[in-house]
Image (cartoon, rainbow, N blue to C red; front, side, top):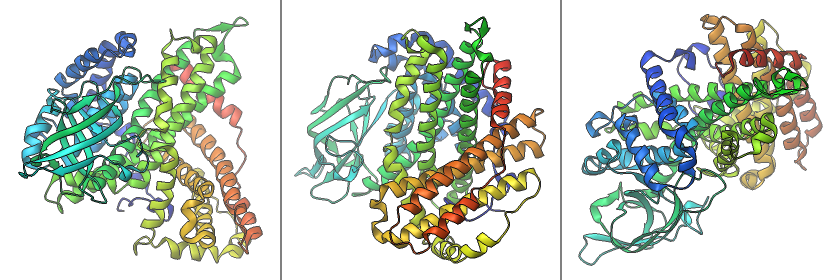
Length: 591
């Protein structure tokens, strides 16, 4: 069976044999992960306080040490000084880096959005000149898109580029803000409009060029060790050969690089979440109250179990789509003349999942770090503890790479656009389902063995989503995207269903291939996940349908949603306690 295209999970089934799961990492991947962990333990954790004092030289020094280990070149081909790894390995490396607090922001900005626009869209001369320096750590990169008046609406930027009279340079004027690595970056990918163009172009700007002025570091709530500043461009002369791609291609470059940034943020926060869980369980296993370790209390077990369930689900979804992207990249390499373009087009090919994981991942991390503080009690609020730092650092992730509000719109908008294609044909499928309301009400909910039952529930959740899409599209038409409350309902249903299905496929594969000896606790994770998903799908489905004033079958749709979200009862208290008992015994996240 072929892997599904972006969004097709809504209308097609996936065989667990076609899903990659973390239990299948090879030895080389495990070695890279261990190298990164050892690096963070040795170079980052002992210096966290110094990094938080905005020591630009120290951050630059540690980035250089990461480069010496080859970590800057994981996504870069050997021809440009890297040791190009497949996309799954790139994501695993990004996960491990995610545990490094503000260093992870500087590192990911450099290796991702600061380097890959040139790698993926630059010409051979640009790659040889600049990518080699970025891969070796000789230069540090930054990505300059956001402006004071252009945040989510990136194409409204005012930074301007005018061709010089001799035709040798573009003269750039403008201002960028919230630029990560600004304080010590050598190279900048800068977006500007040439003359009066409607869309952006992209340029490579060297920080030491005359007219580039870098402001002081911003004072931020979190990620304090990351240099974030404004950059001003005053008649900066940029050689014409530093135009990345074609004139006017900058907006496309920005969008595709943001897809990449979103999915890597989703895996980055996974690493941060696991670090917070480890801090939580270690503290719970040391702290006593009322003569007992707090890890023995039910309320603490609930928190630990929920941290595990949400993190395990996020991880399952991340590596499912990571392998899908790698498979698509291999196909596109035979169709496109350039490996860089094949890679970025493959990532862009899963824009729906990238937006899902950015939103879901950032909100899972916020939950995990919030409960980590709560488990620590008063100590969690103390700056002496890493938990406090993790809590503050987490909050930016719901804003980075497009706000979660924007990404929720992207999930639905992209689903609707892809649904117009003949091989997807979402409209026909939703229409057919809408016309079958009576049959759904009269029919029986499918049952079977353990996994058949779980996947039957998931298929019913998808039906709720499709019915909500159909009814909302019919009522609001082209104005649907302005009905953002309804969009949020639909987006959250899509996201939860994708994550829940990914988790189910992973556990089914673990069970089938006998990859774990304690499969029952993984079934506990799946039981709680599906139980909670049913209530969330029901809530959002009801809200979406009740938001419609012209829907003639509203009451029938409500009945159908009630039926499609009906699941067997689960003793979630005992299930969560069993999950918590495993992590308490291990004293770390080993799921």
